[in-house]
Length: 116
Length: 114
Image (cartoon, rainbow over all chains, first blue to last red; front, side):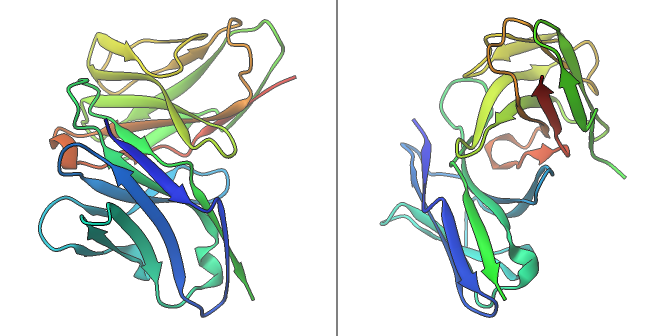
């Protein structure tokens, strides 16, 4: 069965500092992994996804994530935080079990605060 | 532009009342989903539908009902049997690209029980 763990429900960084949001997954099959961002009172927007091929994936707004099979991780990074990056971030893994749901399993989210 | 429209954005309900949240998509997606979001708990799946006239319970279906009479529409009814309905509700859809396809989300509906 697939599952996702996001370490740290809250992360604070200074403006201009490195952003690192951690995600570890559990999957019995090669995973398909996603990062979403959510601004207050809005829906989720896709930042990036890993399916196959290159393990370093680039997304929107300068974010990227690296799939590391040996560590079962898919951490999200951005070299320099902007105030506009303050939001909640969700890691998700695709449901490839034979449930028929064609669903995504989400982590519990990490709220990013950017300090001026 | 293609997308998912949820309405209403905010909804207040008295205890004992049923309410229906609307979800419409023009992405021509087959699969549609309803999630509930509570602080610190991430997204939990309520119901999903892979095709018209068919839907399945998710992890927290008790107290909710859905219908899928049209491909574009997947309304969610929060019934009086739902013990703690105050939450943020998100509708999503997914195309037919299998497990690699991402979910597209609406803007959400916030339900408050008075």
